[in-house]
Image 1 (cartoon, one colour):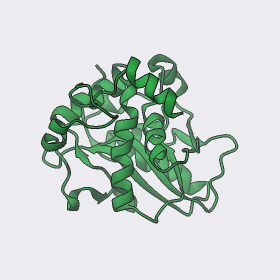
Image 2: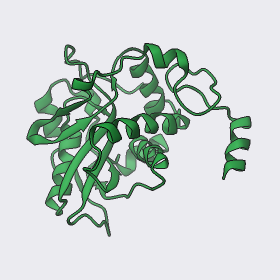
Image 3: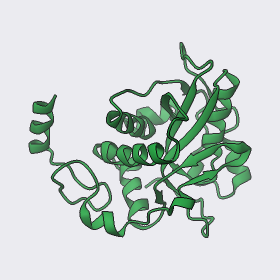
Length: 226
């Protein structure tokens, strides 16, 4: 595996997911490390509607917003390990001991076919790589609803994702403590809908982690696909 990784790094050198600079190892470059909008400790873990808690290391603005747009919409799937490592570190710091399995908020089959990958699944894989484990597919999206990015208020977003997730076939959920991973947390509607499906299937607990959260002072939800 190490040899394969070395060859891949020569052919496809790792790049910072935010500025695109080539790095010695997968991760955030030194320049971005010092300039990114990191959430302060009291903002890196917060409560969503319904008592669901979510951790995120970054605010969704500036270079973070541009980097996640490339990752999510422009085929930059190679950023998954670096971004997943940020999720893993934040989850370990803020939610340690509260979960024993990792899953993700899935996209629909139609969107997966169009995009070519599920960005939240890649993030979960990137996070689990640091923990020497693998995420489990516990959910599927049973309705190809309109993108959340086209909706501007919390109520509309919540309605848009109501009832669109269900347990995946053969998923083992009963009694388990689950970390649910997604890329961005805006209103928390998607995570809440996923958590509701997991709880209804018998999950003992659900906590969440994302790469970034929308700034508190900016309730701007019209984040269209590019």
